[in-house]
Image (tube, rainbow, N blue to C red; front, side, top):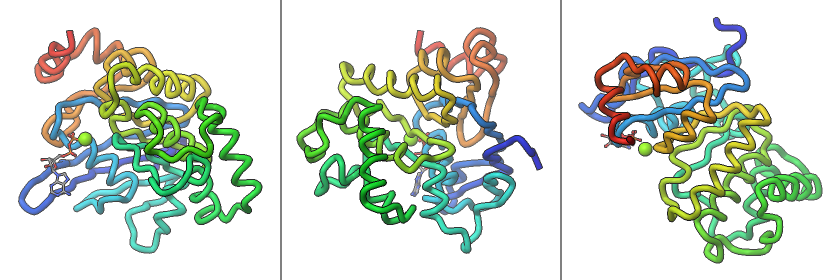
Length: 245
Ligand code: ADP
Ligand code: MG
């Protein structure tokens, strides 16, 4: 066991029928790591995050959180997801609830916090992402960038140990990408442990300390941002990165 690790993905494979989407994936996340996962559409990035968050069941292999396997029917998925939060491309806010209610519900239901404490935490994190003026708004009244900032505040209000982001800026109009990346950059600077699937190569290069390049369900190459962006070894990594120049 890797004692310093928060999260270990071990020999993880996932198939949908005959389609082997993830093949023997191995990597480790340490406290404070900001890991970017890059790769073409269809390479298995979302499936990997979904397996880590227990939204999919791996076909084989393991996901280990602080030394304990979480791939077991007995694991309380909701309690685990409070510690390993997720932010989705399409926000996944509750559209019938206000911004404030979106940030309270998980805390009261899963963490059993009382309403006052939950509200206080919600306000704290909504303020952090600059969405405190909108507490009574419904998601439909917000821009995409605002919705994503609320989704980040909602995840933060659970005070997770790791946050998973699945292309958090891909559904946004270009002028809103910056405000979300700015929030994420702030979290990274504060030492938040993050696993980020992204096509924002500047973010991967400048903010993360570890970059994983996936292709066809395998990790083709991983390393520091300078390893991957300045000195890629694998021909597929080089081809992929050339598309962003
Ligand atoms: P990425 O996020 O890198 O674009 P995905 O993990 O979404 O890749 O998808 C990888 C492959 O897995 C694709 O071929 C996709 O069609 C397939 N896939 C993903 N989810 C499912 C599912 N629930 N059922 C069947 N196939 C799926
Ligand atoms: Mg995806």
